[in-house]
Length: 548
Image (cartoon, rainbow, N blue to C red; front, side, top):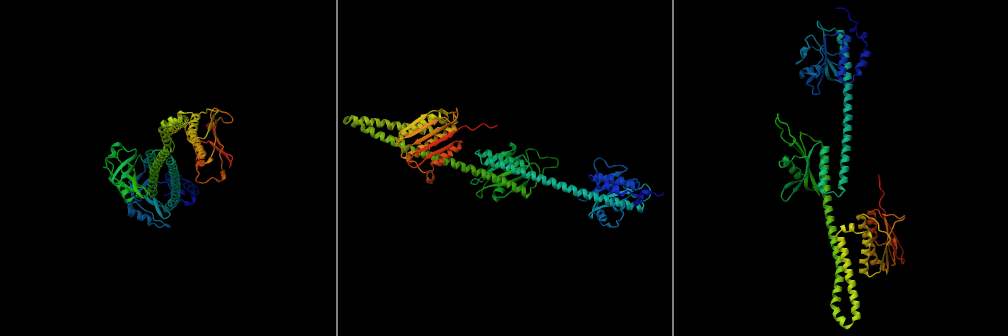
């Protein structure tokens, strides 16, 4: 056999070979470079590289010579005994293996083939085989090939570490993205919770957000009726109609009774069947607790079998907590509305009693005494007739005012000036205090603004009647400065005793109420007063500017 210089390790350009191997982009390129390097060291009739699977039960052929593997990597099994023989090879002076040392090798690896192990950080990562058509490899060639295997194993270890870091980075980025999505989802939910939207709409949005974040299309919220131990669907998202009546209720009851998240997996379908769009394989159910008492539950359904991390279960529980907040907010809102209705009824009843009932009672007394008084003293009877007329007019004005407040749409139908004039007429009839009304402007005002301005004027007149001891009042509806078609200034002035604005008793809430009403429609409320100098109230309103 003639001497081949390429088989001499000292004659081989190891620097160039190592550089190429160390800069391989992936295991496939590394294996191709290894085969090319083997041909530089010793021309071979057959060679190949196979990597061990993660489960260490199979070897995948990445490169082979002279026939490359098909497009899909070929594979063959490796027994535990063969793997043990590879791992038992000394690191300093490895044994060279033959096909007889292995089981289940492919037919392309003939008995004359020599097998080398790829060992990285003490672990087997694959094998390399090399062989000649006739005869065995020289010891010097075997040493060179083993040297190339060591370089390749180090490269594969580097690629594995790099891939691990890349995967970790991707996983971290996905976690950040998911947390951002969760944060955005809950931010929108909190926005809806703070709105006055109906409970069903809020719950439907919560369920849809939960389905989106858990990557499913089916979910529902259930109400539990303790007295009948029955469940009722409040809202649902994406559940086919044919499945609504056949939902498995055991996970729902388990979540409610045990007050904890429940994961249920249905029996897997037959091998020939697939789960249809109307079926599901896994459900995640979390209880809705209000004041630590079960109200119902939220269930998410999945078409495939799934497991859930503790973080995901905690996320699902958070959705149930948001649903509980929505339900409690709806209950509190309903109670507040009921209390407001009751309070308004009481106020109307009080106004009827204090004004209309007393006026009608006085009118009735005068009407009963008039016939006798008419015969005795016609002048006095004429005065009583005038008083009777005044009482009836006052009762009529009070009744119109109450009817106006009972019909809020009337505020949209009437001009602001007409509303203030009607309020002035009612007040003058009730208190017998002269009120002069002056209208220099007829503004175009939205209905909500009319309501609040009417209430401000009403509160101001009530405060005058209770505290000011005034004998004259001036009300004016004036144009803004500079004059404009929209906007106005409401001016209310009395000649009463005034007050010190720095020492208003805390129980006197009228001024704060007027300020809050003015702020609600972006109006400006100004109060000028001093002890013994009367009070002037001005409310300035202008339409907000148009923003693009």
